[in-house]
Length: 135
Image 1 (cartoon, rainbow, N blue to C red):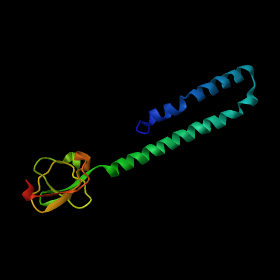
Image 2 (image 1 turned 60 degrees about the vertical axis):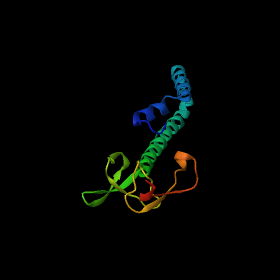
Image 3 (image 1 turned 45 degrees about the vertical axis):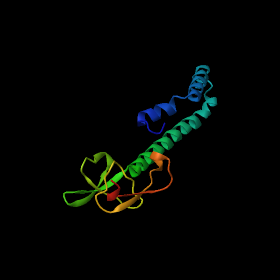
Image 4 (image 1 turned 90 degrees about the vertical axis):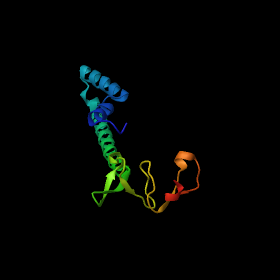
């Protein structure tokens, strides 16, 4: 629900079953001329506006969080270390791996060694050491 467009959020908050019931009651009260009994309308409108504002704020917060959570990789490009999105990785990039970093793609160790947690792939909870000799 939070991933929709702004127009979808507004429509989903305005077009609810309860708002339909209150609209019908309001129309009937206007037809019979009982305008004093329409005092509930500001509460209904306020509730709808608050729902829209809260959902838009939640959407914005989720978008910021997903940006922060997007996997990045440190690569050596043109002799310099650059931080890029994992979608921008191409074959033969040299990726620098360090403790706590996520390995974003298949890789071959060209120097050093690293302890890798493959539990999402294999189910094994033990870390596995990867180095040049293990190829």
